[in-house]
Image (cartoon, rainbow, N blue to C red; front, side, top):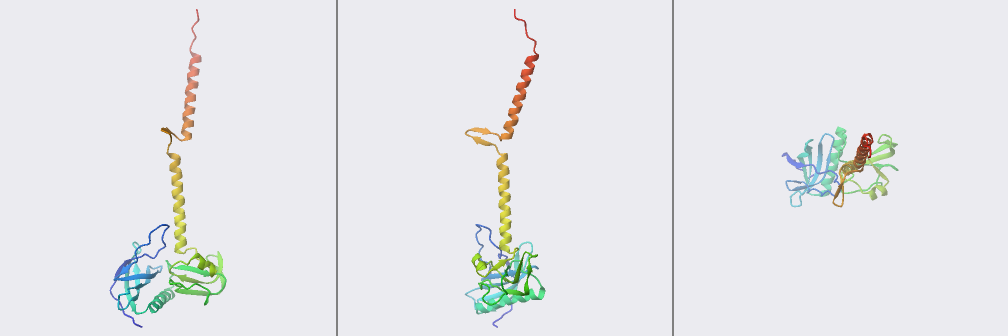
Length: 246
């Protein structure tokens, strides 16, 4: 293996997250002229990345990294350098798989898809540029995700599949996949903004032409107050003594 060790630590920012609607994709992360192509982060904020620099002697590299929990800033180290992309890709997926197996940690930014109709085997899942980098078959079809449905096994990718791919292979995404979580959060934010706008609209006086019109409840209160004044005036007039006409 055309492999080298990189002892120097290099810093970067975690950009491996789903984009919000209408959000502009960030610039690809550049670490010493190597552009990050794929990355996976585990529960302990450590992970692995695959990067490429077409102008380098060894244009492909895999790194391990540690991400700062507060800022997401990454410290890259232990680089394996390769001449060929296929070899580097296999090394990336192997490092991720072995780390998961050795430490029993899950990927916090991985995309898990369950095979609901058959065990995972050749031809039963889509092969993409983003994996799967690992899969697992169960001994039998069993309950998953707290009994929400049953599956024969699952696969993990480092980017979401398309709806067409999910449908074609009869897969089912895990409910905590990053894209699903982001969509739920966005939906909640939209509902909150709509509720705030509705409240503001109810509290804000409306204009009809050049006349400022208060909300209806206030108008009703003013009308009631005016009626009370009129009733008071009428009562006072009745009590006033009348002069005899001569």
